[in-house]
Image (cartoon, rainbow, N blue to C red):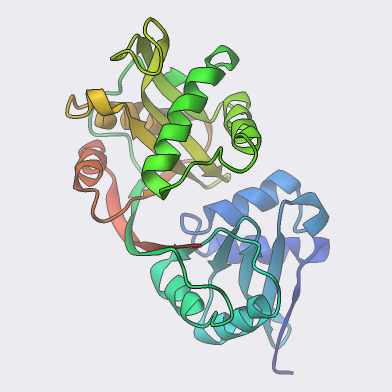
Length: 288
């Protein structure tokens, strides 16, 4: 029978979900996409799922959308995925996932342009119990009326984290829609105060802490987009803010709360450890 690679569809839904369940924290993004769409049908999702089979059994998968994300990818599957990706125009902005398979995949994409940056060691952290510290009561779900200030903070976070502006290509319309979608789904959290250092306009309401539930399934969530206003850093806002987000996520969405962080961000790592997050692995992100 041997091995094969093909685009997955509705009939593969149960098999892909079982694959994601092997590691629900690592695979939360793909699991969440399938749960949200109701199936692995590519017409229902903003991306494609490709499956690698051994003797007709699905053993690995690859999400190909705005990001490329391997699921349970072994070396032979990585080689097949790399050959497939190399034969098509690049559509993603990054490769992301467990460090070893992501770096292996990136090394085999010789036809793609050189990455802009490789973040090879991003601690993957998990909280599977109540936070160790008290939550900040001022951190609540963002509301529709908060869109402008949440969007401004999200742009600042993106520029600081990724290194370029998310509003440069289309005036920010796509990114604004993403921020608005997170708010409408109740997955954007923030502490908002009045007039923080006159930014971006004196007298305006401003975000001093924010975080998003960027991916979620019935088993796990992944917190993304964590940001503290530059003028308020050092005031111990991040840890109680993260405790508030984690409590809400565990109470209302899933028991496992995860995140991944750049290894050089020692301040963030310390804050997450205060909350009770523990490292369980390492992610890598390859940026194009």
